[in-house]
Image (cartoon, rainbow, N blue to C red):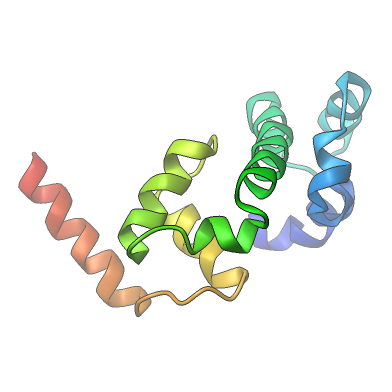
Length: 123
């Protein structure tokens, strides 16, 4: 469903340009909630705005967002920190994000197979 709606979601969220999205207010949230092309979840819309604000804060702290991404010792540490810093970001979302922004990621099948093994050890 998300893939089918992705072009409209990008358009609704100003192409995910962090400065613009971070400035979204209550009227923008209502606009997005009323748009049938969106995934109309208030929590996810508000999280996207909060995440844009967090991204700008990390850019300011590290000099650039790319520098923040490179401030971790490993892919796993980067994923763990993304999950701490951003709302509604899990392992799969962090992996996909890093892939999309052209950061090095391990082979998909190996990463997720390893995640499944780690999860079964925790339970």
